[in-house]
Amino acid sequence: MKSKGPPSPKDHHRDNVGKGNYNRWDPLDENRPRLNSVAGGKRPLEGSPSAPSQVSKTIRLDPNKLFQDMQVHEEKLAIAKVALEEAKAMGDEKDIFNAGPMGHVLSKMLLVISTLTSHQEALTSAVIDYCKVNEKQALNGNGNSESAPSTEGGRGRSSTVSGRHAKNPPTASELQRRKIKQEINKAERSTILFDLDLGSVPIINKDTLSAKVTHAIHAAASKGPEISNGNYTMKEAEVMLDDILTCASLDFLGNGSKKFYNQREKDDSRNGKFCTVPAKLTFKTKEDRIRAEQSIRKLCKVRCSVPYPKKLRGLVNNLIQEGRKKSPGNYIQVKIDTDNMKLTARASVHKGNNKYEWEELDMDTIIPEDVLDKVVVARDEEEESMESQVS
Image 1 (cartoon, rainbow, N blue to C red):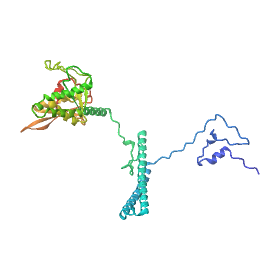
Image 2 (cartoon, rainbow, N blue to C red):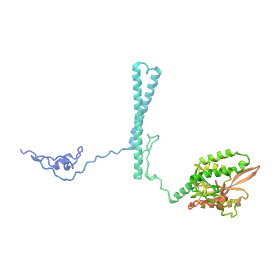
Image 3 (cartoon, helix red, strand yellow):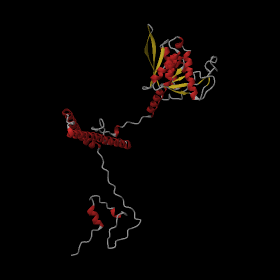
Image 4 (spheres, one colour):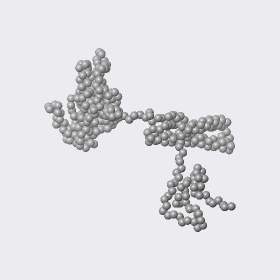
């Protein structure tokens, strides 16, 4: 009887398809030894192309199933912790842990179990946090995802997040309104001090100018009504002003000081007598700026102004003039509402017995989207009429 010959490569392939890690390209791997078909074998081929390597597939992690499994483990951990606390309480009550070597052994065993329980809780939390980070990265990379886990307290509850509910990107108008709000809020944390006497010669060194600003407001306070009327001593005024300066950052709106000259009043007696440069104080909050500005005005009688954009200052000034016509003889204040992008006006009305109340004038002006421009700090009529009249 004729014996059956060895299986052909085709038969070998058919018999091994679907079994284990069988790879039909393994025989072509140059690093794999050749099978000898006859005695003496064949010479290995040189320069043969490498066979494609078999890449094992990564198991896809189902986040929702992970959270369900972790919830079961958490319940078991909770039971273990309750039993552990009961054992500790009973041991302390019966003074078991101090009853010889056996008590010492039981104490150490409870310590080991307590440590392992804490470790298991931390490990569970780390696994869940790792899964959440991966899902967030997948969402950010793909733009959407069919499901993404979200938990309370870091674990336990899952929910579905659909890419259809992603927030639409802001429009150009929304971006401009946001920028206007940021710039106005930034300006409202600052105040500019004008016409400070910073010496008789121009100075460009910022450190020297900073020292001269402190000296200038001290000198202005010494001539102010609060000192002359005896409401404050000079020492108290200096402490208040130094405290204000420590709460703000100081900048200068210019490359250095220069001779003062009042363009609006040619016969101003101060013209050419001293050098000055606008000094900008920036505080952490709008409220800090308001309190500091009120103290500087009260003690030093120094002219201050919030560095609003020039176009916005013009709108405020126009609303103040209209408010004076509607409520003559009363103090008019303008509120800048950045949330609704509008200006509103109100008047301080005298109610008798030295009592004043605010009354809304039902007047408003829309803030246009092109309101931002370069901040102008030159002396002009708008600044004079806006002092202390904007909130």
